[in-house]
Image: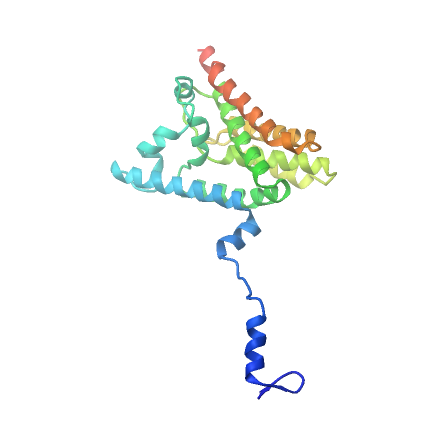
Length: 253
C-alpha cells in the first residue's frame, strides 16, 4: 500500500490515477522568450546580429579585421548611399537598417530595440508592430535621400528605433499618459544625434515616420482591416519619394 493524504491507496490505483492526469507541457525557451519580449522583436534582433556576422566574415575575406565589418564587400552593397539608390539600387533603403558599424553600435541599438520594441509589440500586435518598424525605416531612409550628402553612406537600426519612440509617444498621448520621461529621453538622443558620424537626418526622419504610422493606426482603430494596408501605403509613399524626388543636396551643387 502507498500512503496518501487520507489513508492508504494500492499501487495499482496510484498508477491509474497518475496515468489519467494530463501531462504538463513545458514551453521551449524560444516560445517563452517570444511571449515575454515579442516574437517579431526577437526576430528583428536576430536578423541584425546575423547581418553583423555576415559582414564580419565578409571583411575577413578581403583581409580586414572582423570587427571592422564596414570594410566588407557585403556592407558596401547594402548600406544606403543616396546617389546609388537613385540609380536604381532601391533595396538599400531597407537593408541599411540591418547593418551596424562595429559591435558597440550593434549592441546599443539592439538593447534599445529589445526595450522599446517589446513594449510596442505588446500594445500593437505582431503585424502592426512590424508595419510601424518598417515605415520608420523607410521614413529615415527618405529623409537621408532627400537631404543627405549624395555620396555618403548610412547604416544602422536607429532610424527604426527613433520611429518606435515616436510611435510610443503618440500612443501615450492618445492614452493620456505622462510623456515627460519619453520627451526627456528623446531630447537627450536628439542632442547625441548632432555628434560627428551620427545621422541626424535618419533619426528625425524615423521619428516623424513612426509618429505618423501610430497616428494612422489610431485614425483607423475602428476599422482594423484597414490598418496594415494603410501602413503599407504609407511605406510606399516614402519609397516613391526616395526614388523620384532628386536629392536636394545634389540640386544645390
